Image 1 (spheres, rainbow, N blue to C red):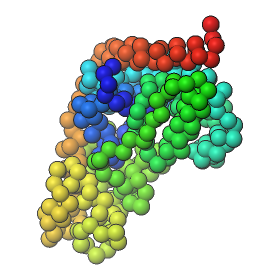
Image 2 (image 1 turned 180 degrees about the horizontal axis):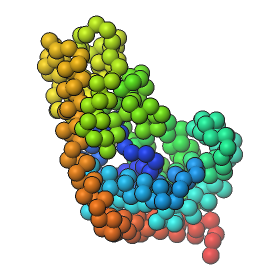
Image 3 (image 1 turned 45 degrees about the vertical axis):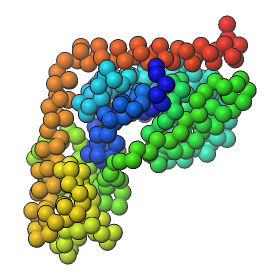
Length: 329
């Protein structure tokens, strides 16, 4: 690899990406390959902390992998692969478990939250999830990791583990930083504009999924929460309308001021219909490319295998160094 900084991102194959994910981050990933060496990993090992039917996990993984390519990630410019196809993730995770304190894992708020929601399956994998995440990142000497607020605590633990290991064995791991791109909109839910749009939301009408049909998209926008005064403008007091204006501006390339001006004399019904149509038009080419990729599973698997070969080559260098330093034969 060149001296360009390395970005690592892991994407869990649970559910379909949303419009929020697209406008907030994924639509901008294509540009990063010009300035960074990027690895995008479908973290199927992380996904099994909950019980999934094997066929569902396999299909979800391929679907997510296809979405990455459909959204513009060129496999020739980025390393795209499945976590389970690179055994070094699991090997390094075990080593790092032995350099992580139970007290640190006990403080992880996401474990507490997920345990409360899945009381019938509080497994050790869920508990040590942050250590595997640290291994994901440190294997590739990643400089930067795109993280949301819910993952910041995990990244801090990753940094602590890396610094602890380096203190014992020398300059082994690159200490990663959070990557916050200078672009990307924060897209809120259509039914609850106070909360960020999330694929894990129980209310399907709150999200626009990238696979939604034009009719589904327009119906969801028609049901979107607004307010009672019928003015279309950006305002903290109008979170629903502000969210719809943000979405419209993102998908049309217009400024927020231009979007406001366009609908200055319009009613909410016309406005929501227009936003829905603009979103459906934006998603159409992504959906077409995704369908094309999913129509040839053999080719999709070949792309994943090629990416895994590149990832294995990178990961092996770090893992070999770690094994030698800790005394493995």
